[in-house]
Image (cartoon, rainbow, N blue to C red; front, side, top):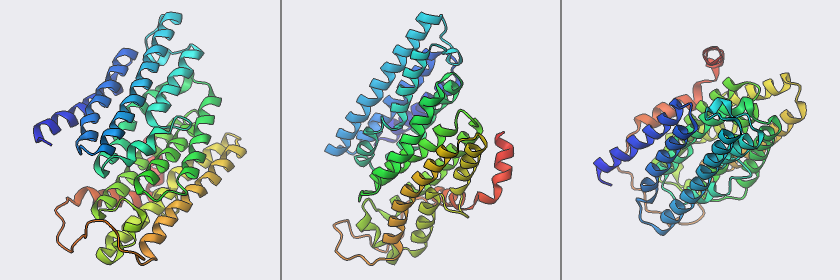
Length: 348
């Protein structure tokens, strides 16, 4: 892609998200979401592969549907209450409809069906943008709307997302689909705690971005998109294989890695709020996710490839990819647990 065009598109991505962050009026927030969607579409379709074009079309249709629902809900609220302010969406139908539309935007269950299919059609770099940056603007709106939203709706979305995110990833062989289901499950963890401790949602979102970035950048460095390609990575780059396996275990939430921190704090808060049943379901759903991360680790570190993979032969030449971002993300994804008190103090 032409570097000037790429610069314009990436600047528009940043502008759209910033516009939504800065807005208190529904029309301005909606405009930011639309700029965001339109900026990423050319990046998704740049491969000119039929799957990439199909994924782009699916993404456009779902995002356009969600944007129309948001506009309809905001207009309904303005009609009923005379308020366009985001914090003053008090009409129950309008607020429920908006949360449903924003859930469709970020891929929360049961509005998650587009997410694995779209991510599967993209390359790993665009998939990384879709799984991290594109979540920020809708999440900012969900964050502002949470006080006026039915708590049962948020709890249902959170529980369904963690269960379906864990269940859906079990039988997948494509790494991008596994990461899509991982994303759905992590979104569930963020939503479930939003009404009780919003600062924990922010911590979970930040750490999710670090860990998911590590996973995508590691797979990009290893040129792996399927599990059977992973089995050949340990002989090529053992250090990358080790750090990727640890990053996946961090995504699964194992101590003493960074990913344990949000799960530990969220379960603790749920127990404090006298919700033992919810906390138990969330902990059991985390085990489902952990199984497919362990499956990937097993394939990477404990197996020898039983067949010749049909991927391009990755020769032992020096890579041209930049490794600075990957190094920083790996450090964040593996070593932040001891800083938990400092992170909690900064976020509250």
